[in-house]
Image 1 (cartoon, one colour):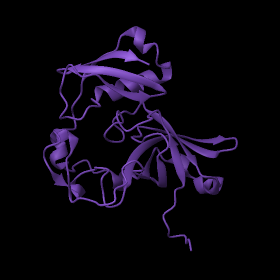
Image 2 (cartoon, rainbow, N blue to C red):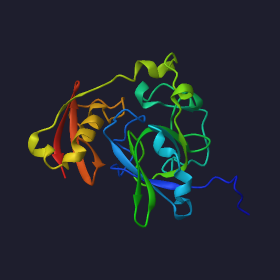
Image 3 (cartoon, rainbow, N blue to C red):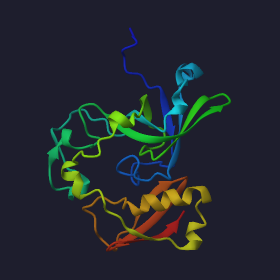
Image 4 (cartoon, helix red, strand yellow):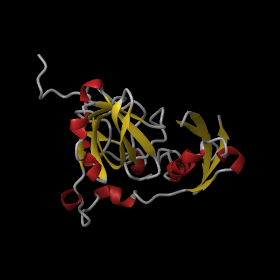
Length: 227
């Protein structure tokens, strides 16, 4: 028998990412990325959102729906460490966890009333694949959630990596204008796993309904095809 304490999916996100590859490694890295959170019918009561518009940021608790394992492992191979150095799963944000729960901080742009869908949250900076189930939403409180003097462990040395992006105008024109800045931000973050560094290899991922294909030489990423 279901009780109020049982974990329930309350919403799903609508984003431009149709697959895992290409999604920013953390929330907030590409603030120009926008997405919408659409709630299940049971949770579309406007009273549940009263006061939410007063917050600039919110926390999303969500399900790693594409990474559910039958058995968890105590260590993982973080891609930013080259995929060869093992770290404890609880020292990482790896999706391969005892419970497939993700946590993201996003900017709340709007609580929008949509016919037939009720309140829809428009957010910026989400790192979720299209269709990801969401368990809960909580307000971000800067006076307690922000810790400017916090240390970041081994992630401290890997967080500032950026690429120069060469995106020919003819190809950029294939991307909807309101999605271009977000896509450029995604590419600057270097979507490849850190252990892949073959300049002859062509990579690609789905974004806003298109296949974006590119190669990387040194610190320069060049978009070569849009399908």
